Image (tube, rainbow, N blue to C red; front, side, top):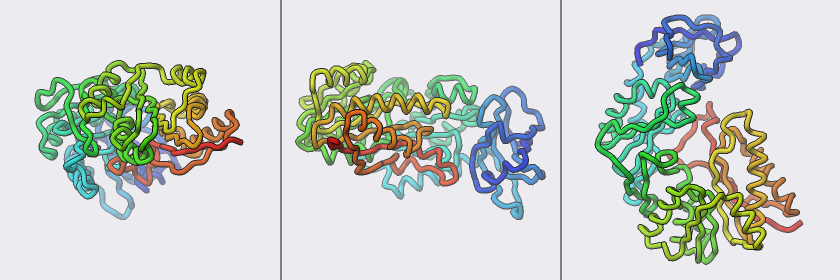
Length: 407
């Protein structure tokens, strides 16, 4: 990422969020762009309608988020000089590592955690996960993609790891015009690795798994839900590699059935059960969860504890209506499979579906079954996934612990 040579001028009345520190400038807020933009943009400064500099970042002419601001001026009375992108990355990565140490990460029993959570750590478009001795860099912006080699070097140095993987997912590719793919930019990693989550041994594939093999955002929720599972039969739906089921079985669940449609994920879930000496209490089933729940309902099967952690249903605001309808169908089926007096932990990782919308959907799902929904808690992402107060879009995960009574 070169020094700023592009100037982005905002429309009248659009500058206030950026004086306050919001990191995203959408295309609709842009009045004009000057400078050598080229095909994929570059480093820029952002000005308000009066020509006062608001901050600096990266302009991408092909993205809906036209500018990801990296530095904010905050006040027109303060001088402002843009810094090189990699200098900011190096500084804020160090700050993020210090924040994780305050949280006790990594620890003797947990070596899977998020090191940098994009906007929550002041690095929009950049996410970094630690998986044991491997670091995975999610280059979710054009700026991060262009600087991926240098970022990999900084990460290897600061985290002291030999292997650094850079991953670009389909969503980032579509939104930022960067190629999908996974590259090993440091080291010689060639397959799955093992790391720890609260003492459980997890097999993770940084090169081939969803989200490079793990979802650390649910770590605290897995442990909390497990506390209610002793002596219970548990259904872990959309189990992926078995995280919720593993925690429940270790906490004393009498039987766990883990259901996922992915064959490789099911194979890893079985391996994880074996790694932790829990294979005798965990049954892994490869099936479409909706169809599996319909069959369970037809057979009258129920479970005392159910966790339902589906993939993101809403990719954007235009998909929210369809997503809520799908969540409603899924949760109606899950509630029908819940034994009297049971507990359901139902989740949404769709940032475009708000918590009030999600809870209202649960009420509607219960109403379909003529049951009242009681919400005992709503949990969010783990503490190593911070969000910015000025960018609440980063608060995406909702996990509602509910029980039901008949109307």
